[in-house]
Length: 429
Ligand code: UD1
Image (cartoon, helix red, strand yellow):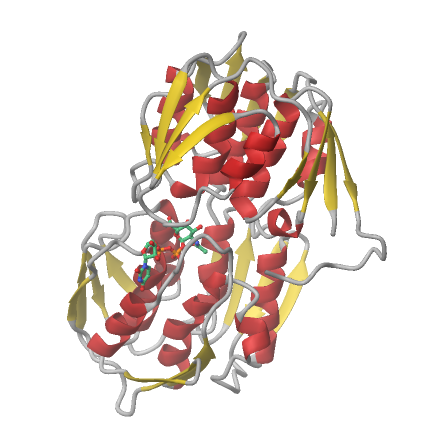
């Protein structure tokens, strides 16, 4: 099992360029299936989830190549609508191929998606949204067979919760449905607006992305386009936290601070000095020990993101005072707590609420990255801790963070990677 070995207590200082957003790149890559032609995408991070998405595209008959930093996908020779279970289980966002396949082929044969084990993660809203557009959905024996005989028809739909993935699937499918689709209680994440910008560049007519109600005028067909994905707000804040817990300073280049308001406000209240500079730059400086965090409650955007909850808990673990963190999005997203405790953190969990009594010092320990964001949080904690920390199972971290340890080393961190005995990749989660 591959691990990070961290010698904590080094003050981080320097500059970091923010990677492109995984959660934008994955649905946009899937959406290229619906855009029958060549799409040129800039800024897609080089991650195992991106590679898994490209494998699905190739399986479906798309031509995929990398040129410079760009990924070029040509879906004009798409030949299938079935994704085998071994590719589906690589990651949760494989379900976002549902809308594109229905748009391009009128059918989609899939199995249940994989991904981080952070809760039940049902797909009922995705299926309801497809049914609303006239799709016949049959679920049997773990397989999902969807088809639409006479093309999809625009409809009015409402989500009972603003699901990111269900909004993405509906947006892509409705782009080529006949007539107008209105989706209320849609997710408002910046990645939704980014997907809409890409689809609109491909000829779609999507209005209101990022505002909660989406109006989609169906068009006959989408075409290829060129697009640059937005910066990753979660990895950006992970680097800010890494600097903060070590009493350091960092300049982020290519950040989009406007997407990070809820997180930046917590950092400021915890005592970090932040400066938003021209040209999408963001500077953080931390003097001394962080103060306790204001109450953190994860919420759909523009609220505090669930994906940043674990890393902020690492900050709370060394802060002066008691912080309260409530997770409302996923039911199983406190699995990092037991690992942080091994490092000396004092955390009580009652249901969905974690009470974190900050300690001046954490100590190194052997810990397990149980999911992507938990793994990044343990690295942040390891950077703050005294002594050596070994974070095992970092394949999870590879799913979302590009060149993580190299970039931390450039800031002065003492972190290295140790492959498993055989140097073989671990089983995907
Ligand atoms: C996306 C992000 C993930 C982030 C999450 C919430 C990607 C690739 N992943 O995941 O990093 O943590 O948004 O911001 O973009 N739900 C249902 N039924 C459904 C769909 C969702 O009950 O049909 C529930 C989920 O179990 C969860 C909540 O709704 O409790 C939010 O899920 P959703 O917004 O769909 O998250 P994802 O799109 O899976």
